[in-house]
Length: 92
Image 1 (cartoon, one colour):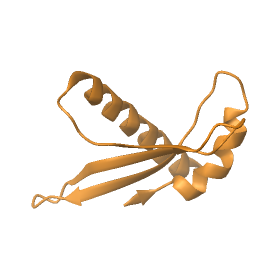
Image 2 (cartoon, rainbow, N blue to C red):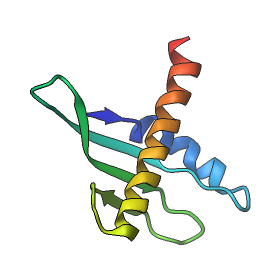
Image 3 (cartoon, rainbow, N blue to C red):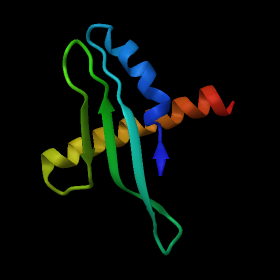
Image 4 (tube, rainbow, N blue to C red):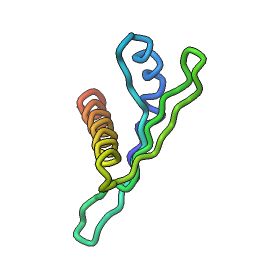
């Protein structure tokens, strides 16, 4: 499991206060195949409550349906950005 939910959520509210921007906290569940490859099974993206709107949370899974496929790819892009940011800012 790759969990950037609690790490990023305090910053999500600050980023979302800027008009035209968005950011999510993320959690990703992986499966280790027999070939030693980690395959993502599910990605949860979360936004905290802001401006009277309730907390938003959605889980994305791999799909072959065209709309859901693009949503899955978008969720993977968010996780990749979170992982890259963590690597550059924390690991270095």
